[in-house]
Length: 390
Image (cartoon, rainbow, N blue to C red):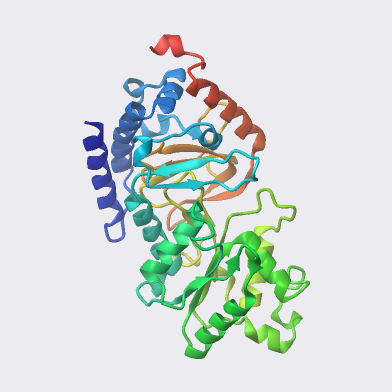
């Protein structure tokens, strides 16, 4: 029966994702989120233990905002899946060292995952390039080199759906392949066609360093010699997507500095340099608003089948608009795992006339460790309230 319930839910969610100009609909979201919660509570034992420990089994949850959100750290300790392990089709893993336990998102289907990511990329990043098959070059590892990377899977899905045959990867386990990237840029410029560049934030830092020693201190194109400056100028309409942040890196570059340096190096406006916010544990991603709302404040836009809140970690309630809280994401694309996720990131809601968004301000390690410790204890069946809710 649970299989049929999930398939019916996925059909309804897919209908929403594939609607032209899919609208936000709070009542629709609440209804689907509560149905999905009932399914995941029944199908995922560690999550059920956690909800019981909080005293929030489905009979006590009447709003989507009251669905228990699992801290991301719990994905390192438990297989949070709603299907038999033998049916696993693909597993994405968080980045980490060889000795560090890594979080994992297990999938038995990629249909919702890929439908969600393409819908958001087309709306927020490709915009007027959708259907034109531009060249796409990626400063990220290829699927062969990184088979468990959600970012690599996203880029491969994007290239297959919207890129041309000259699309490809310019980062290898040995480092950047500047020669192949330079050839692709030159070819696009010769044709006068926009090119799409995407990759990790840290790879773009390496690119800037490799093409000019003081790139992040000098954001004007004339800081390079004329030949080198021209080599990296992109055709009009081109755009850049950077993502991944700098967690665990010895060097961190502020977003504003990186964005300005990339815009200057590639000869494009800053509004054409977008940041993506995504997580291995999620089925959906979030993009800067600058291509769809250039006159509004820069903010991350949430697709209608997600809900993003900023909460007080102690009370669990929403903080006032504009104030800083812990980012909680409820993502209906996560049907086979857990839909409500409490991140380790600090953020704030950004109001705008064209639709509110949010901004991510950094990490809250203390809140992550505390929340994860409580969640793990509860999932093991040791949490407070277990006797009360059995």
